Image (cartoon, rainbow, N blue to C red; front, side, top):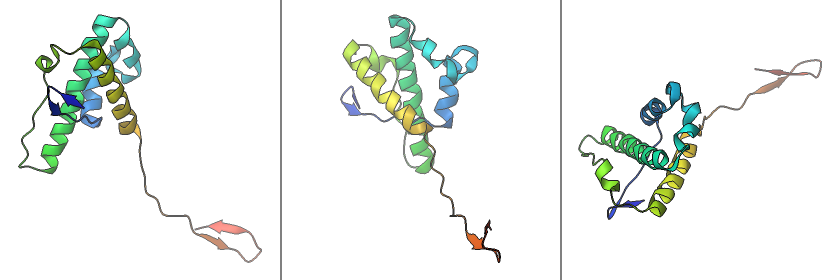
Length: 123
């Protein structure tokens, strides 16, 4: 997403999950819906989540490439954003959170042997 003329990226990883959880009641991300109760708080919380998930992306990139210098978003980057831009940001963040929750596990197929009496047994 372009913010202040620069392409910005977001990542929902363990680091950002923990920080977003701390915004929620009882530090439980299951209560994230409460962050959207009223419009003023909603905007502030969307901005905080963007900053957190941007930091998650930037820190991950710096971890993978020690020569990379992170460039974090700040509250100031959103001072003059329109409500439409904040709504678009919210949609991006929602997609990133959904993608970050998806888990891909590679497994080996279960080998099945036939027993003498015709039944199949798992190995």
